[in-house]
Image (tube, rainbow, N blue to C red):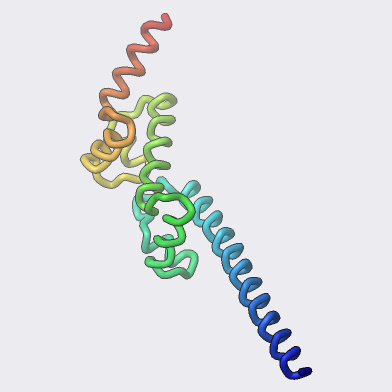
Length: 142
């Protein structure tokens, strides 16, 4: 009888420890995810920033980073990085009036064609069309 009670308590303790471990892993995973987001948000303009660089920075495998990132955001790391870059490109278009090549480089795109394609996918128009819209809106305000 006492042995059955000890077995039961041991099984419960093992389950509790397993659940606690899962909670700690999930919490650590979320903390790591937040660090990755902050890192991308800070270093988006580096043209060498990539999945490999980010994974190495946080001592993660690329596969684990991709899985963790997708489960938290529904996006790939590259999709998120490109969104951050395009959002910042839009801000810079409003502030600095850079030409398209300078703008692409300033937000971390090493290839202007890739920048144009990514910009159009996210914004619905090319960067030059976006610049024209801004100029038209400003001339309407005068």
